[in-house]
Length: 317
Image (cartoon, rainbow, N blue to C red; front, side, top):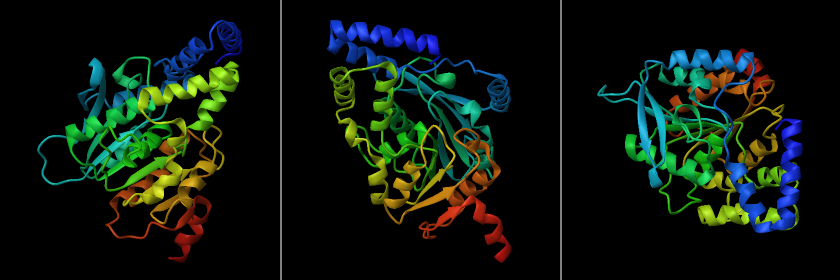
């Protein structure tokens, strides 16, 4: 939030908490779920969005019908009756969309694989201005019903966390993702820190903060503390690749370390120097993801790889 808008918001919540902590908790949850404007901000974002939208202009667009009349939309690349081929699902981060992820989509689709590039509600071509984790997991489930089982699912930031929440079955009322492999890119491993930071930012007191967090359980059926995929990733029966940069200023590197420590099925790839956003189009990252999804089942995924070690490793081969 801009400084003035944040000051006004904090003032408003102070007044609302004095009047009704219940109302302030409800209002805080609605604000937390409100998605940013779809308009790109700044020249770099505008250029990236324009280039991505141009790349996707001929892609098939498919509606994903959700409960309560809601809808999301997906791009499908290499769809139709093309014979046996791999199928990948791609999800984006908060405030992003598939127009910003075309470098990754292009790499995955290059050899003819079918790619389902999913815009969550409130993002991209899906429209709307609201999203929460339960709705994202529902969207993933409906996409899987629509297109079938995925050979791999790849998600950036919030989108990677949503894939993990889905795959680990944290929301049992929604059937889980059954992809053969999962890739997270700069993704959080648990959600409590986001709510705590948000509460501090808008000036919530203890009672209103508790009400905000209890709203998560009323909406999803699970407590906020249950959304800890960093400890459950290692229990998945499929390989997981966690890509992260230690210089990521939006999602701390400790999240990647939690993923890596959870089990031998999780491999950590450090993409240092690419931060939180440039990481999704960085060439070494794209190469690593392509190698991971192309690898035959049974290949060891337990090693920890550092981007800065790659040249030395390749030279020794």
